[in-house]
Length: 359
Image (tube, rainbow, N blue to C red; front, side, top):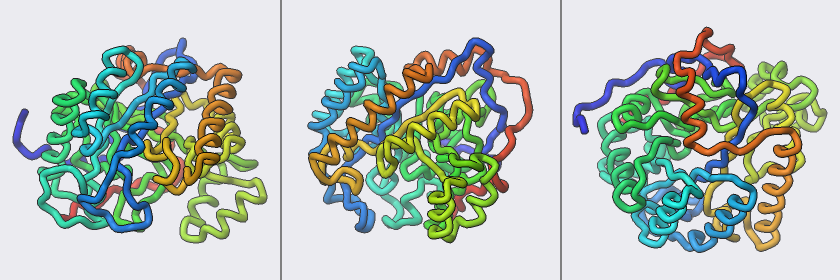
């Protein structure tokens, strides 16, 4: 591997900004991504130790559930998971059997080398010096390759904290898919990136070689995407956003079982079809697969609600003609017409901002 520091791309997170053209025969598809990570205190400070992986024992149930629904999930793995023998062996077996895929998820606070203080600011990889971000990524990528036996092709920055240096790092290691952009969300309050104006549909960070697959969030309600200005104008006033939602005017809905009801998720799927999104990217955190490790699944009853959510959403997707797609098939679709024609996509809001590169 080239040890030189990769250049920062000032165009992040838009990159080339050209929409992916999947071709005229493409029909809407979906993928399920899991931020596969250690358990930690969601209300506490970031720490390098004191983590556990008890929920890993609950992962086979979700894997079997996905296989029953002909879904091949994508586990985006961080360093504690990649270096845990039981987790790595299990993931390796699923990958060898063609039942799952494994990608990279960088949590800087638990990924070596440890050269910066642990803090909220440094929990976003984009706030690290680019060379340190690269070396942390390299350590994680190589741990996955060594323990799981997979050359990962897809990445998601922990806390969605990718930045200007990330595309060059991914290109250096041969990854061609990024899913770090969470459209319609703004993390600047904690020093993170602003994705509030990012496109909702896949687009090229670098045409033909690196595609962005945004984590799907949509504006639903009577105004839908036309209400983007009103929604973003109230970004610092959550009570007013709640009023807009209660009035049925405009509401942001993320495609996740964590904090989003099945009914709202179904509405978001319908909104995605109305907005002609070619790909839906579902996501959640792996500790939600067992009670007590995230705010979203506190009890056995919550866990059963979690699985009922997926039953409802999978059934609705099937009824609407939205089929699951494997990572291999998706990558084939991406590169079948790599140099898509067209111009930069219409942004959903104001110009997108990136993280600082402060150490």
